[in-house]
Length: 386
Image 1 (cartoon, one colour):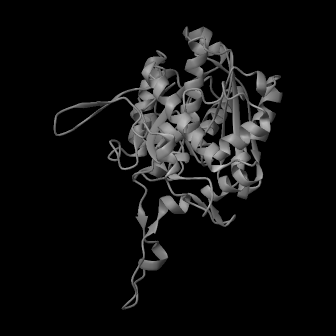
Image 2 (spheres, rainbow, N blue to C red):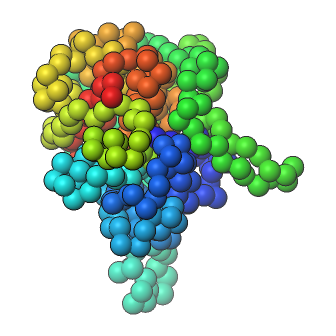
Image 3 (tube, helix red, strand yellow):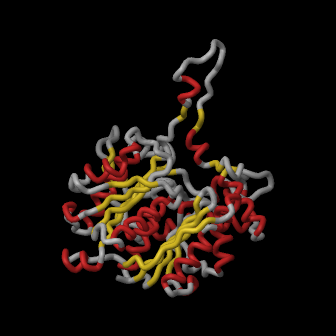
């Protein structure tokens, strides 16, 4: 599995669309695994905001541009923040059904390129004199659940209230995410998974190989920030996931394909689960999802060596950890989306690849990855030593 380093909102990757990012990650994943593109039988890519001009064709364009044969089908899917995980699940299902034995799966997002839109019904057939057409920020619209009647941040505030998580505790968690990312980056923990991008600049070619959103900060600085969604609340810009650009891709193969093609797997996908939860508390979705996936794998979540829960918001992860009784010494040990960012469709694939590399390095025998999903869902996967 490979990923791009994640670009900050309006940062170094703002000129790369979601398809470009996924092509880069996919080519890198195939190369790293010594996978002949001719052996691939399926392509599935998660993408949420559909911001690239060719978004309708995204997965198909990724497959073709990555050198995967013309007859191989491709699917672009959207399970919101769980899309990268869902691509992994869909690829596994195709292998289990015998439809293919090697599948490219991944996720991608360019949040910087989210359009400011005027909708067709308001402009295509003319507008009255004196009517000013307002632009809709499609990114903000996508981060607001119109059915539940609230933005994602309020769902985290709801969990903070229910689970008794204070502003101070939330800030400490956010700082810890940044510190853990910095320590992991310094130790080279991301080098196996990141495929550097060569960017053009006024000073010549520039290698982009480090997550751009992460930053050094202090508890005092975090405490001075205003809350974003609720007066007297918990969530600030620093305790929410970073709005970012990036992609991640993995190659899934059956046991028979591994043996036939002489492949060296990083890890084995053991089980998965997807669930629905109350939309106004969508952040608790990982709890029933992890519980179900772990049960299918025959393990207790508390005995997994590593657990990665996508950090949509600090109090959201903390509520999940509290409900499951997780050890913070095993949870998001290299930091998470608060530090490195959350390109919506990419994060599940990023977490899966990160855990697979940790297992391959011998840092864990079992690992669980999970994400909450806007609209009220949760998704989880269990990996183990191959």
